[in-house]
Image (cartoon, rainbow, N blue to C red):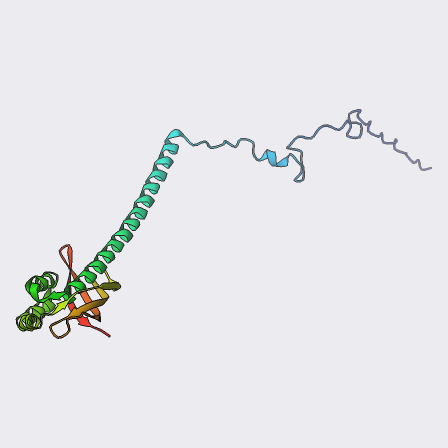
Length: 211
C-alpha cells in the first residue's frame, strides 16, 4: 500500500501594519515631483548665485559711456562747424563776385585810373594781364567821350563753389551816359565770373559777358 504525503499548507506572510496600503500619504517635496509639478522649476535654481556688479565695473562702464558721448559730440560739432564754414565761404565768394562785377562796370572819365585800379586789385592770373593790357587804349576813348557808367542794381547767384574756387553769375543794371547821350540810358549786363581764393581774398581769374 502506497502512502501519499501531503505537504503542509504554506503559511502566508503576515502583512506589516506599515505596509504601503496602510501607510498615510506624505507630502511630496521637489525631489518627488514630476516634470509637471508647479514647484519643479525652483529645483533648478537652488544654489544659483545672483551676479552683482562691483563698483569698479560700474565706474568702468560709466567711463566708457562718457567717452562715447564725448566722441559723438565731437563728431557732431565738427560736422556743424564744417557746414557753417562752407556756408560762410559760399557767402564770401558770392559777395566778392557781385562787388567785382559792379566795379568792372563802374567807370567815369574823371576817375578812370581809380576805377580801373580797383578791378586790377580784385583780379589775378590771365584776366588781370588782359585787362591791364587794354587800359592804355581804353582810357583815351572814355576820356574823349566823357563816359559815365554807374550801377543801379546788381543781383548775384552762386553757380558752384568750394574752398578755393567759385563760379558766380551777376546781372547788372547800369545807367550809362556819354558826350553824345547826356541822358543816362539803362543798360543791362550779365557777367560770369570765375573766382579763386588768393590768401583770404576772392579774386576774379576769368570774366565773360553772357546772354
